[in-house]
Structures are given as structure tokens and as C-alpha cells.
Length: 256
Image (cartoon, rainbow, N blue to C red; front, side, top):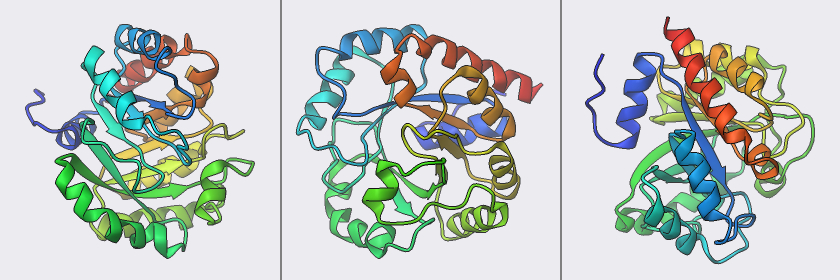
């Protein structure tokens, strides 16, 4: 089947329909200096990384815009903003994951911040991808759970995760993102991914706690369409090549 849609989200839908998996590297502006970007991009290009997610739960640095522009100047890999707050916005990116924390009950992260940021987001001209964001218990408190002031979904409560994802889809979200959090001891369990994937029709992103290719393969086989890895690559950039090869190959296995 030929992929002929334009736009990042349309490509995700196409790829999902034929079982192709995508690999996204998470780039945290707080942990990535301008000097580190050329090597990171060179590795990502060589490994055929599909997307670069830029953002984080804190982002106390002020060089988000400069970082994205630097990446775009030397790379053709699409850059997607993964914002922890409305201030994490730059029109230099290709798209924005417009996150609503549907796993929590913090009204600011469900809709409050979106009301404030909507005019700026519209003016940015970015492709906006409404995303039902679900924080899953990864075995230890993470920055995202602390900042959001919301308890993560229990990793062993499959029915809660399924119902939450279904609600997000029926509310019009284009994407579900299940995240164990950066540096989580445990990734999102395969049984949880499998159950959610079976009940939704929209693309499913999974991230957090994915420290080696075997874990990435297991999550792809469970039903994840896009795998996001950040912390492990920050510690060992050479993992990019292995992760990318494993994720892309698992898509062929699943499709076959």
C-alpha cells in the first residue's frame, strides 16, 4: 500500500493501517546544549529516526526556539513539540502535540491551559494534533506526575486504562499517548498497551522506561504505533541506531 497522505498525523494514520511502526527521539531542551545537537542529529539521520519530539515537563531553559531552529537547519526529520506548558511553543517546529492529561483530574491540564494558549497556538501555524495524554505508574515518582499534581494510572488496572483511552477517542482526541515518565524504572506494561490498542482506532504512542531495544520491540508487538525514547538515549546516544532498527523491524514482523 502506498502512503500518499500529507501532514504528520495523516502519515501516522496511514502507517498504522499497514502496521508500520515509528520511532521518535525525545529531545529535552534543559538537557541538550547547542554543541550537542550536531552529533545527535547525525546519529538520528544515520539511524533513520522518524521524528524528533522536543519538550519536557519543566523546560526551565529559554532556548527552545533556538534549539528547534538549529535542528531544522541541519535536519529533515520532522520536529514535533511535546510541551509541558503553554510557554513551550515555537512556530519553527512542524507540529504540536496538544496534550490533555485525561488520566488525571487536574482541570488546568485537562482544558484550562488550552484556553489560555489556544490563540497563540492557532497563530503559530503549526499542525495541531489533539492528544489524550495518559500517565502510567512506572514504579517511581517522575517529574511529569509531580508537575501535573495528578496520580498516575495504576499499571495493573487494565480496565481503567482502556476506559480512559476510549473516552479520549470519543471526545475527539486524534491520538493516545501512554507515558510511564522519563527515567521510569518500568515501562508501560505490554498487557496494558495490548488492551488499549485493541479498543481504540486512533494511533497509540508509548514512552517512558524504554531502556533497550528488546523493551521497544515488546511494546511494538503489544500494539504501540510510535515509540518514544529520551532518557536512555541521553545516557547512551549510541542506542539510537539499535532502537531504530528494532522498532522498524518489529513493524515488518507485526505486518507480516
